[in-house]
Image (cartoon, rainbow, N blue to C red; front, side):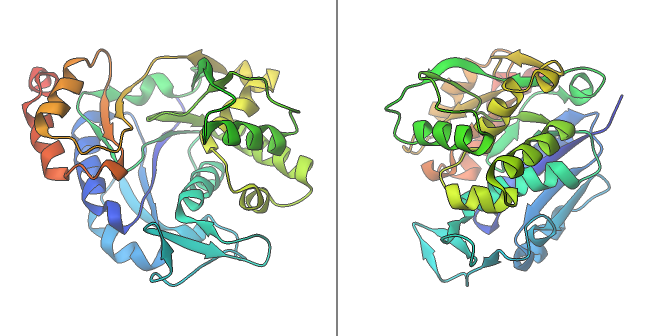
Length: 295
């Protein structure tokens, strides 16, 4: 079996949720080499406490081009930090996290990466052995799920097609966005080469100029557009994470209701913008039958 790593770009506002994620990874996840936390260079001291034999916090500068610089922390919009360069308009930390996932998956030593955002928490055993080579990489895909009038997703679909030189997209388009997503390093590297071939510039610059990008859609459309790489993937609509995407804050009872429907799921995620308190998530998971059965 080849090596599989865990990948989590994160930042200081998600420190508490990242702590819960790390605790759950240590309790439930097997058959991985290392869990990489990737954070802004100046935030490394906050995250080094999570370092262990199988976890390390790494500086974002290791995976970003040198021409992309972070603006001072007090320069924010909607609680987001920004990076600037002479090659594009300023880009938000949201896009930077996408660049970090791609850059890290292309350069770190493992052949496969399971990407866990810091608002994910595991609540059941999760063995990554089945995700490693020579097994094919699972490609999460929901067919015809993105409508042409979807306010954000339709723009991401169109940007992905431009970056990859796929021509105009057909709607409704396939959706590859989710939690607990697995990427193959060879496919990531080939995707980067394709973006640079089409755009005639560095892949990171191409994404910064597009701005409205989804890394998961980009990977999914690249793989589906490449017969060689598609042959190394298994398309699946199976969700591994119970995901809550709404803005309303959850309480313990609401979380318990979501977890009651868990069927084969190994993780839970409440979007950070819902501002659901971490102690509420921790308490709810501690009481949920799924965790108690694992014991």
